[in-house]
Length: 295
Image 1 (cartoon, rainbow, N blue to C red):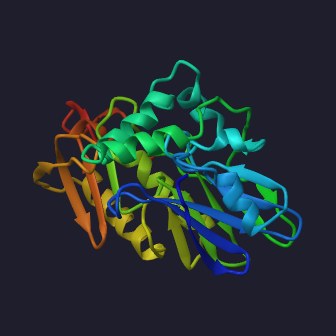
Image 2 (cartoon, rainbow, N blue to C red; image 1 turned 180 degrees about the horizontal axis):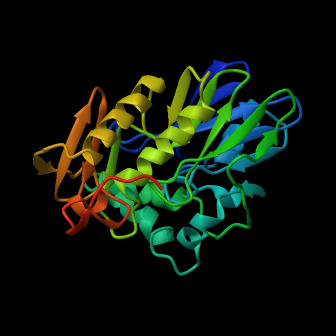
């Protein structure tokens, strides 16, 4: 039922926009077409027959490359067979994991369609049914050869521990999912620290030297390495003791409450102070506290 909006970016790159939020929180899926196969970057929420949409663009064999294991990125996995996900995110797609279950996706629908019950029921009826797929592991440095186009996997942990970005060095673009975007939160018990995220940004920048366009999962237009640098400057400032104010960090359906925030350019990092540093060390004052250090 649900109609996906397809945009041709180049002869070998398409975006497939899945949006039930009227522009507030779009989900962007990307299709890269090589000479021998095509790669689908995530499968979205699964509100319709994504396989049919892809088949109308190309008849090549499809490999799904996941950026991470959240429910709004793997909702249509059931429609595909060759699927990659970093093993650190397998726990998010377990049969008993509530975050990636059918109920989690329906909760997303209910939040955004709470004033449109008829549309909610219609989309619910046509959603791809959740079934845990068979995932192949993909790690930092792995390369997917599509024939004429190679996508290199780059580990970018932060949003989840298994976040993977993909870089096409030949054509100068990358896909980061939610791993690198304009807003990041560091407040949950299992989240990495701001200090660890700084290492993530350093690693990505080294591998993405010639990248001109970066495509994230919920940002309609591509951004450049300038945003990555903004995030880096913000994270470094926090690590070095920036005196930031607190504000409400809720965003759309994401409830975070009040957190410290540091902004730089188009980037914003929300954080708890206990999620700044990676571990406690003894400082020069001989008192135990959290200090900036490098391993």
